[in-house]
Image (spheres, rainbow, N blue to C red):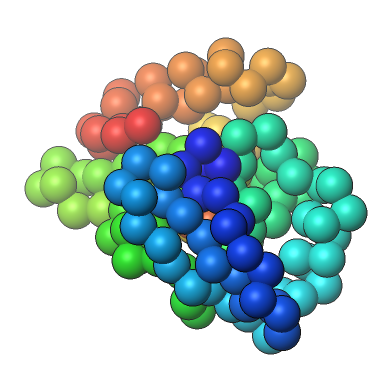
Length: 146
Ligand code: SF4
């Protein structure tokens, strides 16, 4: 999403004007009060290449947090900042993979599958890991949108 959002102006008081480089729309966002320390960490240069400037990642991308969650742009509210979107057979969203490997499950079934089949994978290469995980999810009847 760093390819999408660019900070245009720092307005002070942890408020920013950002530009969606695809639509040309500007948004005002503000760092969530409880995430200022995370954003300061980002400002120290701990940003992922091509990631949104407000996306905090840690623990090898196991932890992912939008530091402007409360004021995030409308497009983020609609599509979420996720790497993989997992939907069930009825087309309902059941989970998102944020950062590189962090699952936000929305059903106990997906959470169980993740614990039993995905957490046990020991693959260091992210590309190989993603392909393996997508295969596991598809085998279990899910659809994965990237
Ligand atoms: S949800 Fe937050 S971190 Fe993700 S792209 Fe939007 S503003 Fe950035």
